[in-house]
Image 1 (cartoon, rainbow, N blue to C red):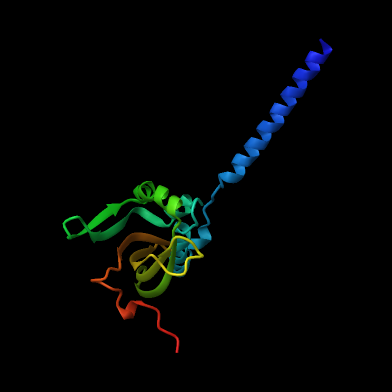
Image 2 (image 1 turned 90 degrees about the vertical axis):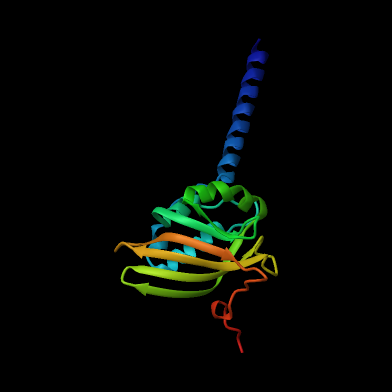
Length: 187
């Protein structure tokens, strides 16, 4: 009888240790993201944070809390492009809808978006940023699979910058990015 009790205690202890290991493994796999309020103090930091938060290698999670923190209440993300009838359309999304529509694809394929040129116009507490981007599936990729321009409207409420609208379109053969919105070639 003593041996059965000892055997049961050993099995119970081993099971607890295995459960602790599994819990610890889960904790490291599901990274806990936090909001960094310093990333919205300047216009430059806010735009930089936008690119950082959507960019990650395949199977890596994004900090969607930080992503949503960048946007003003009722902000819109507006994708534009050709539909099936070869007519340009605009698709309006909230930050939550963008996450819902994009999260799986971004994680499955990897998506690294880099800003390569920027023009900024400001007046008072509003700003318009025309930001040229290129996209890769991985940091190791040699050539981008896509390029385009983000048109970003922002407002400063006296404490921080907020993205009010993010409107973008991709480069096509018919509509290449104009030289004025590309980095200058080094001589």
